[in-house]
Image 1 (tube, helix red, strand yellow):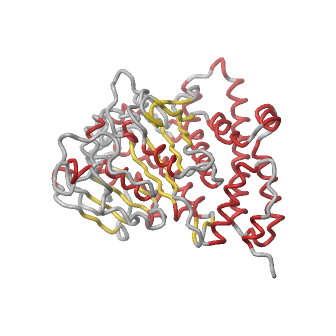
Image 2 (tube, rainbow, N blue to C red):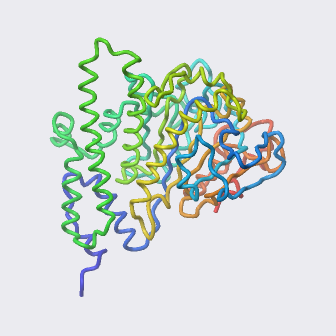
Image 3 (cartoon, helix red, strand yellow):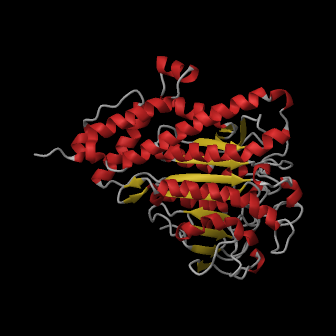
Length: 458
């Protein structure tokens, strides 16, 4: 009797990188047996607010939240995404613009810090002391890979290595978002290295070298049974290795320039570091290192210049005060430039996940990317609404894709909160929870804050 793909997979001999390679093999086996894999979530937090009007296509009449009386959805087929979201135009069938969810329990302001993903209000005196678990870690615990969660990000300050202000595994238990790409790589990808290999990894060699050799070994054992999945995994690790060596080279150059290193030299590199962090997160998903990733883009940084590398010289605070809540606001082109860059990185992530087979489709079919700001709406946010851009539908677990959605305005029948949306994500992940975060005392607890949003849950 011919050897089946399933039998071949079970008989594989894995190499030194087995801890990282095993999830890949398990995914290939699941594909062979038609088993549905765990959903994946990526949270992207960008500083400085996300005004609702900036999420609305020019060809769709914009309504202020106070004027929205009912739940409405508009098909995006005949509407081009607004300029700041334009890099995702080619993926529009997967895109949902979600308007009208409120998060007043966070208080709003320049940044809500971990309140964005935790839905609670922090003391202004201590923004790194979370009051509860954030949704990214809660989901990660429900659908863990080797790690339940990874967090990477970009700071305008090249010397800043981490922030503790945006993710948490519980009250007063912050999680570090790695802001240095090399240290992010070391923190996450060295998890599979032990003993002498760990020493060699940190001192001399890159674990990815071992991973690439191991994937090639598995490919040889599988022959044609390996299909294109392992080829995609090999490409992911290979490109990450090249990125790592590039970063090491850049670090050496920056070290030589240390005596004169200041914002003029470090700020332009910030966007390059963010590109690296998106690639690390993407490869972590592809390799099964984690099913949940959080990526921050200068989140919490108010008086900063994170986007000099793309020609945006104005500080976040500067163009925030130029306005972004009217179509003709002076700040709109600057918001569009900063947001468009982040959207281009999201588009690359989508491209990569779409090119990685999974089951009868691709990894992107089973992934949801949530883009939002750590400041709910405008620069001095009120949290009366919290616009989001969603990419994906988790394989039909959510009724999303190709839509522009308006929820009724704050306090009106049918209104929903961000906490209710997070409950929707937990239901979709198979870990139902009826409420999430702190409740808003001014809203109906049952109708507006309890259980998943029925309009979004598949």
